[in-house]
Structure formats: structure tokens, C-alpha cells
Length: 371
Image (cartoon, rainbow, N blue to C red):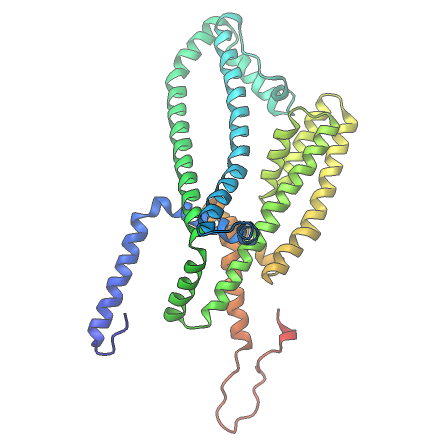
């Protein structure tokens, strides 16, 4: 609390204490910071949808029921694809493990057909299995030597799954309370930041919020749309596991320049099966969808929503991923939007000249000169 009677030493000690408390709290919550960041990103991205959802509820506890049901809906949207992908991965892993165990009696294990038909990778895997499990004795020895490694891999994988699951639970729990107390939190954040940094910081915060919302719309929703369109293309072309491959294409589409890797690989897979027309159709359709999304839809959504040039959006996404992981896809453009907003405010800030001085050639730019 401000205290006009405090001495300079007392004020300095107070600021040091506040800084230490913030650092200590951040260190204590370091394992949950990703969950908090994801909750904030999801709350900002879905604020419009939540407003419409909240308007459907009435009564004394409308905020509680709206927040609870909307959080459950967000959780279902996130969990269903993850559960489906995990189910497919476990099924294929169990089939491969069963083949590996059977190979101790019948020779080298046989990979699933769709893995064998992957260009280059399928032949390489078959060659490796043949070399290592060419006869029953060698296979039994390899399996016995691989058991500790497989056990360690299973243990690490289980720990990672448990950790990600805990992060997801805390993300949804935090998201519920953010929805529940959204208006109060918004007012408190504005009040505290205004007291700390002045009224001009509100504009930076608004730009960051717009950048997060536009990035979610331009990255996630466009990637989901790409995955859905390509899922239909895969189904029409007769590709095995079209839903799985469509989901993988959507995931790759969230990463800049990674979507072609998905649909080109699937096109080559169809080519190895002799479906040349289907392979060409998949690659052409994927290229057209990617061209429209990257050159028209995504720049219009991200750049228009955040007033941020596409180059800075791209740099923000790539730098955010490298620095913060997956959540950096949204934090990176938000940070770039705040920096660009700060630069523009400096550019348009009037230059104070001495009395009677001539107009400086570095006079403030007009709004039409905004870069």
C-alpha cells in the first residue's frame, strides 16, 4: 500500500520484499506455470463463445453452472482427440509387441501393413528387424536383452503421461475458476497494472489479448479446418486410417511449414500401394488447402485481429515455440504484439522541442504512416 510517510529506505526495502515474494511464488509454482498459461490462453481464446454460453443461463448460480459446463465442454474437446490417438498408438504398439514375442518362435516380427508401406521408413524398419531377429535364437536373445530397456521406456512414458495428465487437470481446474471470476479478475488486473505502470499499459495488454485470440483463431482453428478437409480427402482417396491421418495433418498444420510433411508422406504411402491417382490427388488437394490457408485465411485472421504484420507473427510463433514450448505458439505473438504496440506508441509520441525551435524533421508520423 502507498505510504507517503515512509522513508526512501523503507520504500526500497518494501519493493525488494515484494520482488522476493514474487520470485519465491514463481519458483514454488514453476511446475504449474504451464497449466496457468494454458488456462489463461484458453480463457482469452474462448471468451466470445463463453459470453454466448453464459447468456443461456439464468438464476442465482448461473455463473457457476455456466463455468462448470463450459469447462467440461472444453475438456471434452481436448480429451477426445488425445484419447483416440492414444488408443490407436497403444493398439499398434501391442500388435507390434505381440509380433515381437511371436518372433521368438517364428522368426522376425512382421510390421503392420500401413507401416511397411511408408516410403523409405518401412523398408528400413523391415531390414532392421530382419538383421536383429533373423532366427529364433537371435530373436530370443535380443528380446531378453531388450526387456530392461523396454521396461525403462515404459516407466518413463508412464511418468510423462501422468505428468501431462496432471497438467491437464490443473489447467481445466484453473480454467473453471477463471471463467467463474472472470469479470473480477479482469478489473483487478487492470487496476494493479495501471497502478504499477500507468494508464498506457492498458493498451499493451489489449494488444496482447487480441494477439492471443487472433493466434488461436488463425493457428488452431485454421489447422483444425485443414485437418478436417484433409480427412475428407483421405477418406475419398481410400487412405487407411483417414481420421488418424487427418488429425495428424491438423497437428502438423499448427507448426509453420510442417503441414506438407504430413500430406506428402501420406501421398507417397498411397503411391507405394499402386494408387497413383489417389496419391497425386492428395498432394494437389493438400497443396491447394495449404496455399489458401497460409496466404489468405491465416494472415487475414492473425494480422487483422492483432494489427500485426505476418512476418512478426511468424517470428513470434517460431520464437515462442523454441522458448516456451507448445504454449509459445500463443505467447510468442502476444509478446510481439505488445512490442510492436510499444514501438508504435514511441513513433507517434510528440517530440518535445525547446521553445522557439524549428520543427524537427523527426516529427511524429501520422496514423496513415503506421508501419
